[in-house]
Length: 197
Ligand SMILES: Cc1ncc(COP(=O)(O)O)c(C=O)c1O
Image (cartoon, rainbow, N blue to C red; front, side, top):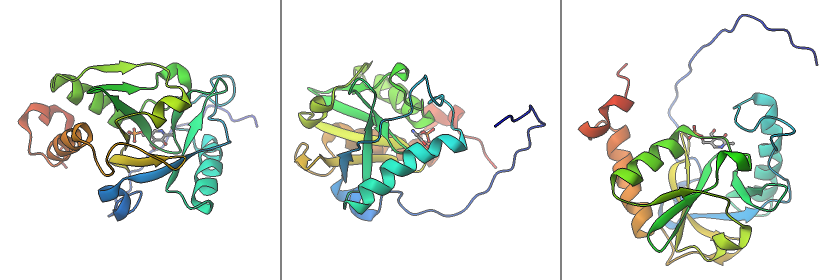
């Protein structure tokens, strides 16, 4: 409990990884449940840090959701706003505009979230970072999760309430196709994001 500042060492491991939430989630969308475990708050474990210990919080939510038969959990803040999934950020689409929870709501500000915000704005879509109450997700036209592992995965339902027409809605599809082109090096406009190895 008294870690001292030590030299930082880093290594990078690379391995093949299938779809993070499973192939069904990729095509039909993932099924989410709101967890009764609250997301770490800014007063407990800094949520902005991708710190190993903080992941007990995510693990409790994820394992609880899987045992209940869902793909992943959405975690709330102490005030009942949606923060994020166990290891991915959330976007909702209403009337063609995108909304995503702000950093002040205890999210990890994911690099994929950041990329999606940039790509969406480049496509002329409106993106607003603001608090999202639980019930607003139920009436979203579309929703999707973002993360390095998850990439962009459509949300099929939250708490058994289906979203949109099932599968990826038009905005999710448009962003997912662009994202795949970008990470696959097929889009010159975002070449600055890629590092050739
Ligand atoms: C808690 C949490 N939120 C969001 C994300 C998505 O972040 P990124 O897009 O940087 O992978 C992750 C990824 O691991 C995460 O663990």
